Image 1 (tube, rainbow, N blue to C red):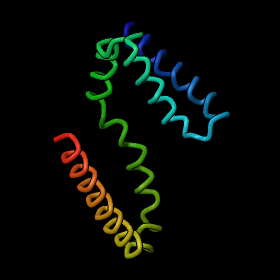
Image 2: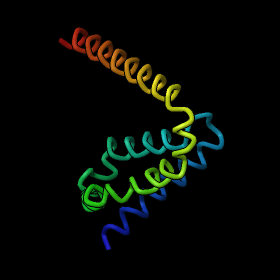
Image 3: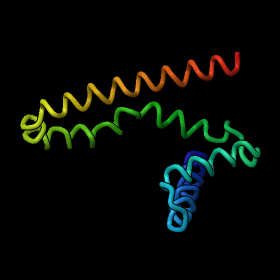
Image 4: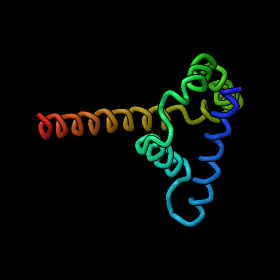
Amino acid sequence: MKILEQIALIFLIWLISDFIGLYIPLPSGLIGMILLFLILKTKLLKVEFFNDLSDFMLKNLAFFFIPPGVMILKSLDIIKANIIPLSVIILISTIIVMALTSLVVQFLAERFD
């Protein structure tokens, strides 16, 4: 029953963030993460409150990859037709993410060292 309470609270935060997202030009997912962070930081709830739900989600993580996998298989003909552009985009974006991550880590290491 505790998992249901935790799921209900997550859905409540999601609904609130979705409502706030109608008036603030930010993604509702980001607003929800900020709300959850503030709830945890102000100690309205402790992180341990979500232990059962997080354990359940981690144990069943593979289940959440089924819909994206099915969509990839359904779109295989589109992917085959565009394999070169997709490969170039993936390669370039990976290099950019790695470089930016490296620069941010260096900056933070120098700043806080």
